[in-house]
Image 1 (cartoon, rainbow, N blue to C red):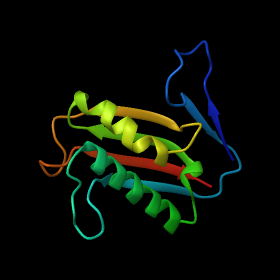
Image 2 (image 1 turned 90 degrees about the horizontal axis):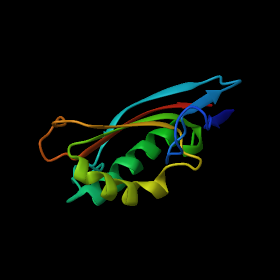
Image 3 (image 1 turned 120 degrees about the horizontal axis):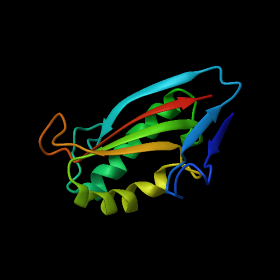
Length: 126
């Protein structure tokens, strides 16, 4: 069972949980970075499309393990430019759970291939 923690005294309210407490967990899934390229090799044209594909890829790995987005305890998001944050949030928001898991968003210089704009890695528990 996952309980999202948001102590008011620890930090301001945010669109993510400050902690995720896993109790009675018997399985842990470590998900490698998922990018905006679909199973056919097609890369999304912009941050919105790449974010949707990356979340779909993440959810496919969860499903393969018999899990859902509700099992996400920790998500790390990498973007290549801070101007991409609003587009990512708008496009990816519906594919991630509510309440959101513990989340870290980093802006990095580049990802594995120059046209990639987003990569998402995660830890899920069941």
